[in-house]
Image 1 (spheres, rainbow, N blue to C red):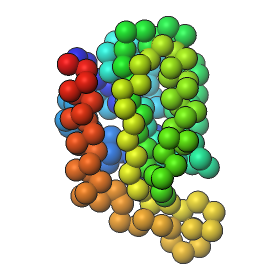
Image 2 (cartoon, one colour):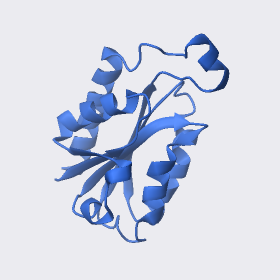
Image 3 (tube, rainbow, N blue to C red):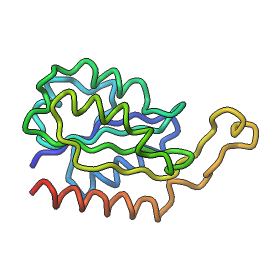
Length: 154
């Protein structure tokens, strides 16, 4: 199984999670703005992740998926991950990206979210929420998530 993780980050939160997942899956990591369609097509498992900004993944990630051909995901699996001020609405926030991936033919094998520093709107005035996230527990949970994905795709 060849694995690629495509991500974007503003604060560095999501990169920490991407690296934790990649360490388990032995994945190559690339930022969304540098990921090419030809490169993506060479992998059987692709992770897509970013922080959640105004209720959805970073625009660079969504634009990348929108540019992909309709059948690029045929016989491939994908997973979605994010960092956010709160993960209680993870399924709702992941929905736009999940729908795009399914439309491109991917089977979405799982989703992961953990807290990340949130400086959206009024939170910026107080220095943000979740200042110490992702923390060691979040990294551990990301690695456990990766192990569960690895078991699914064997």
